[in-house]
Structures are given as structure tokens and as C-alpha cells.
Image (cartoon, rainbow, N blue to C red; front, side, top):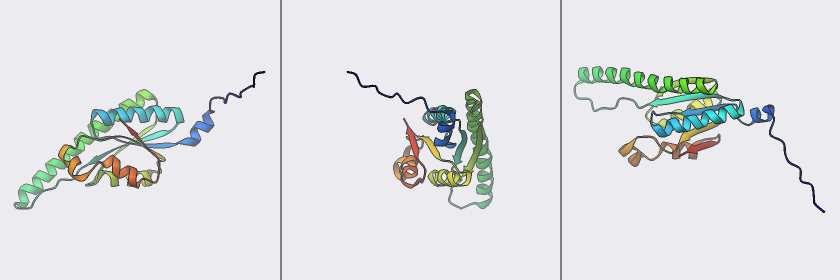
Length: 163
């Protein structure tokens, strides 16, 4: 005799929507972060969720020795950084639109990207973070540690790390 096994049906749309409703997808412009972003969009589509794309802009740091030059340099840096952030976020909007996923985009200035990410989770009530294993921070990453690792250690919501 053969025992009948019950096959669980595909989760309903309502059940999928209960899992995750608002995903935070940090991007830094690297290919790896854009791949993680695309993965996050696929998850959002599956869960019928919306996404928040976030780019954290490192602040202008310098040693003060000629105030007028530094003020001009900082202003120039800030303008360029905002233009770059806007370019990254425009790409995110384009990808989200193609995936038919509601997407809100923000950038934030912050010395510690992991803190900006965690603050955005709280501020925007995100329930899942999808991010890359690492960005392109080179020597800075080696000295300060991985921002992804810091998010993993401090996040109160689940974090999906993509390679």
C-alpha cells in the first residue's frame, strides 16, 4: 500500500504579502550592489512588496589648513556626490520600473554607511535588508571592516546577503 502525501499548495498572494512588505536595498554603484538590488527586486515582486533604494554618501573629510579652499572643495565634493547618488538612484528607479516594483529612492550623507542603513530601516519601517557582501571601498574596507558585517551584527530585521 502506498501512503498518500499531501502536497502543500503554492502560497497565496495574501500569504506572500505577509512575509515581507518593505525591503531596503542599499546600493553603492558597484556591479555587486546592483546585482543584489536586482535580486531584491525579484524578492519584492514575489512578496508583492515595495522597496527603498538607499545610497549612503561619505562626507567630505579633510584637515583644516586653508578654510576658504576647503569650503570650496567641500561644496564641490557635495555637489558631485549628490550627482553621483542621483545617477545610482536613477538606475535603481529604472530597474524597479522594469520589474514593476514600487520603489522609493533616498540618499543620505554618513560617515558610517551601516548606521545610515539601520536608521533607514527604522525610519521607513523596512522589514528586510537585501545587500551585497561588500562594496568597492578598497583600503577603507580593510581598515574599517565590512559595512555588511556591521549591518548583520546590529540589524533587528532579517538581512539577505548576496554574492
